[in-house]
Image (cartoon, rainbow, N blue to C red; front, side, top):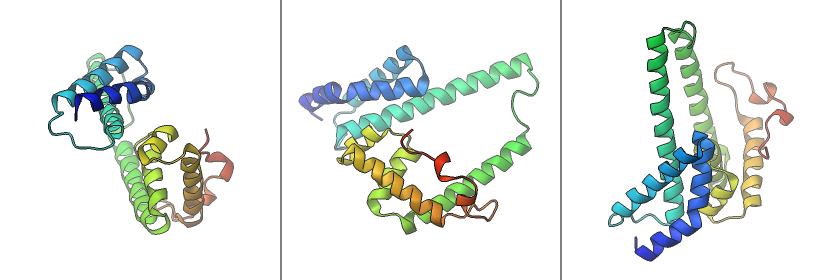
Length: 187
């Protein structure tokens, strides 16, 4: 990464990265710290960074650092709750374990089905939007496609899922659980 590409990265992607961090951590100053630390880390590692486009790498790194921050914050809160001995703040471990297993089953079912029924472009858009939590505009920038194309791919993917996906927990089609109006991509 050259100094010129680094300057272009800051000018072009910093606002998007900051907005993403603000949305995730819900604090402007913390978001600025996370994005600043990420940019500093990228500059320090410029010799080994070969990712292109750099904007996608920056967004990905900011997102991961936000997740790290939120995990550390949640761990601190759990310690405070244990220290204060607040009853019934968290569900019983048994309930949590069942929910975790059901979620894992659903994720595996979506993975299996997405590779079978979605086009490669739809799968990329679906993963970036729903798994990575990226906004449609950022997804379109990373994939170098129009924002409307991202929305179209998401709508088409959801239509395909509604007709094919069977809930592994209940063994019934997902379309029986939610109506079309309850799942919206444009929200």
